[in-house]
Structures are given as structure tokens and as C-alpha cells.
Image 1 (cartoon, rainbow, N blue to C red):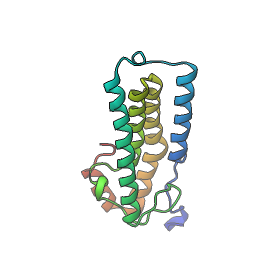
Image 2: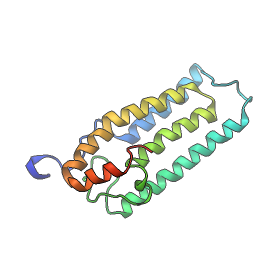
Image 3: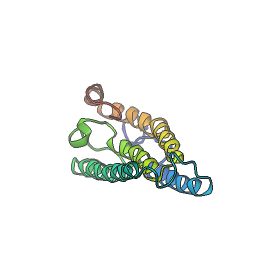
Length: 160
């Protein structure tokens, strides 16, 4: 427990990995049941390859971000207390590089699968992450770290 009886964690609306899992199931399911193609299958191979590159790069950046968080002395799950404010590595450019990677991966899937469903799910995931996780984490981090977090938030953008 933190000072004032508040739990020492962000009070998020949901776990971000659960959102990713739901969006993946929806994206692949909807693409199979009712394909909404951005372009006809087999007609734009360079964009399909670009989509795969975006997905792979997103996972690499997500891994780097997660390792930086853990090595910086903090925790990854949103329901655990944040011990330290991590501001190095990918956190120099984005306050939320892991969430950014999640959204970019869905955009990469949109290209790789030529599917409007994944474009819509990328937008939905970004909005849900902002409302249900990011804004709530920011309140928690400001309460816990005060001016240190406020200064960081002024210097570094939320997404990119």
C-alpha cells in the first residue's frame, strides 16, 4: 500500500496482454469470416513484406523495451508496483514504447494480411490502451514520483 491507503500500482481497466490476445483472435477470426481486403491477395507483395518487417521490428523493440524496464529495476505487469522510473533506452523517445509496439504490430499485420480489420483493431487498441491503461498509469506515476515524472513527461512524448 502507498501513502494514504492507495494501492501501490496503477489502477488500469485491463491487462494490456489480454487486449492484444483479444485483438489477435478478433483480427484473424474476422479476416477469415468476412475478409475486408486492402488490396486483392497476391497483388502487392512489397507491402506484405513491409508488413512482416514491421511486425518483426515491433517485437524486437518490445523485447528491448521490456528488458530495459526490468534491468532498470522496475516491473512489467501493470498490477505490480513500479519501483523506479525508467527513462533510458527506448524510454528516451516514448513514455510507452511497449504499447506503441503493440499498435505498430497490428498495423504490420494489416499490411502483411492486407486486412482492414487489423487497421481498425490497431486504432481500437490505441484508444483502449490510452483510456484504460496509459492515462491511469500516468496518474499513478505522477502520484508516486511527483516532479521527476512530470519533468520526464514534458520531455518525452506519450507514443512517438
